[in-house]
Figure 1 (tube, rainbow, N blue to C red):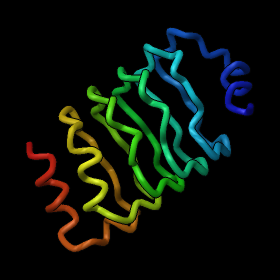
Figure 2 (cartoon, rainbow, N blue to C red):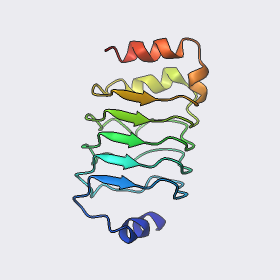
Figure 3 (cartoon, one colour):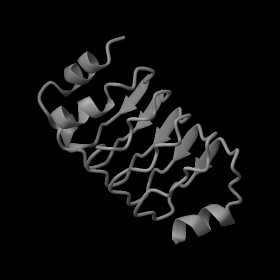
Figure 4 (spheres, rainbow, N blue to C red):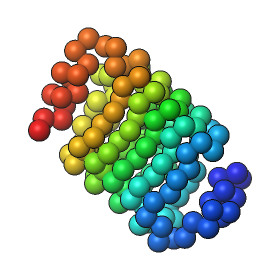
Length: 135
């Protein structure tokens, strides 16, 4: 599989804390369950449509998924309790009402960017996001 070869060619070790897979033409998330120390993951500027398989990467603090084709966050972020940066701008997220419950449990989130998605054009977008994540 392309992802496995890519990670091997990059020399990614099991104790790696940051992985950069930007601009690789990825259509799907590369499974990295063996990287238990992973804190920063760059998957931006690919062609990813959904994010899954992060169940064991519970130490992720920053996840960069901007400029992809993601249309839903369902089933992808529930284990990321320590995340403080989530970059989702310029994707295909459409339903704010369906999206907010999927990320509202991310209590450490400080930087969330969903601009450039169709949901950002919904009525009271900023107010609804701010209400979900009170400071």
